[in-house]
Length: 368
Image (cartoon, rainbow, N blue to C red; front, side, top):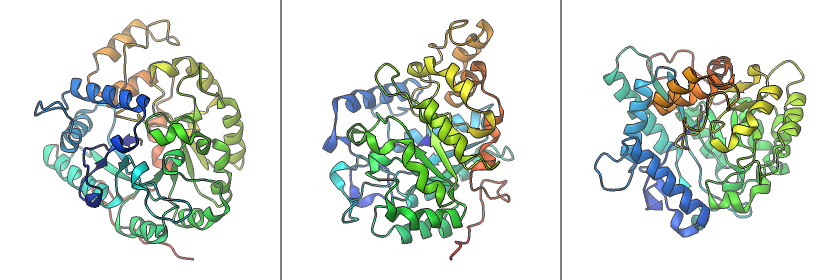
């Protein structure tokens, strides 16, 4: 329930028909290196089918479709939109700091097209992509955009990265936005903790603090905190894992899970030292599975009898697993994560129960 859509579109006026990605206008040395590594990893997986040295949106989507169709572990993938950066003061788009923009309209059309291909390729297997929308509460027309998502799409969540999108989650004027999500039972997947993938994530990291989620919880929103709020580089990043777990325990004290955590990017080599603490602190009943793909999912780093009891047999199976979605599942299973996290998404997401063929009926927005 945490896979990103990436692309190469440079024309910001065509965002409803292409994935916009233009980091050159707002680049940082770290992100430049990271994007080169991501490209190299996708190329190793056969993503550059036309051998032009660049992974296009269509090549990336073809790679994703092959991964899902051939997966032995995963039946459904939530593909994520990312709204643009809007000025908190004016509500207008800030094109210079918008490095990636995946609109809801583009993603809606893309998931429908991918699902039609999956049904054609593998009839009866039940594989499908689900839509993870993104609506910034900073935009002047957020009510209209959210209404579109609720009425015209089959979105199963709304995704925000506060630092990247310049969103102050605990600002008092967010209440109407949260109340609309709560009324319509639309969960909010929110990045929590350090964000190194985008330049704005490095500049505005204070916006990604878990403590800012309190207002959304007060308004009744079901929240999913990405990455269990863990640091990316434990030697350098502040580690609030224990404090976040206490916050999560308070949020769920009524017996209902209102604040979930996802396991996306926990297979990263830099997070290996954190796994024992995560296993100690977090209950499998409050975790949902995510990969954070295309963030690399490397098996080689999880050495047998070094990485928290992974056996030689488990290690051999992990490194021989070519499918990145399956590799991520098998790493986490070998670390000791329960398979319950794979099915918990069904409890957390806004799923249509009638959607067995990759299509689902459009939903009706609930007004006050």
